[in-house]
Length: 293
Image (cartoon, rainbow, N blue to C red):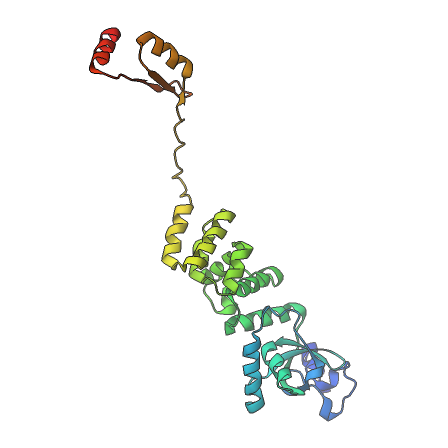
């Protein structure tokens, strides 16, 4: 007879409870099957170090905790086995935290095999697809998937179920000044405002317009118009301003003495300029005309 388990591959063996050499207890009541939903002690589960969500609303957690007290956890959390009856969250941290608030000692969990890279990918993709993250958290998650999981923007768009242009727009948010990013995270401005602000490359002007948006409650269209005014159009650079004429006092004095009238000479660095001759009466004007020939 063919021996059970031989020739099925390492992954198949690791999915068997008996292969869990990290567990202290192999009795049927304490076996932790891989790939199935089981009840795990809350004390045996640790948070996900790759969790992309940076902020959890205490009010929302309290509401979820009350729902869990009344109805229980509808959707199990997902964990990976770490060894010696220790598990680490892959996804479902919000449900896990609410369960702790609700006073549960056990939670339903789906046990998976995952290395650090796969765990990061699953945690990020799961959160992004649920649309629970703020725009900056989504952008950071996208960038981490590109940098740490070596995904192209095209592959990333396939995994998260968003078109490539959307992925690109989120990634561009990371070019915003830190103060503007914070405003986007706390909902002081929206995505439309942020996309308009990105076009302003001068940091000071970008932050100044951000404050104006918040103070004056500007619409996205107003911000787009203001951003266009602050952003130079390629190939349409402004012509340099003409040199401002300077007053030539010495020459003015010489001509005033010669014409016996007040004369003002203005001349720029290129030699161009004007001569102004003042007169106080018709008679003085006629005299000047005779003098000038």
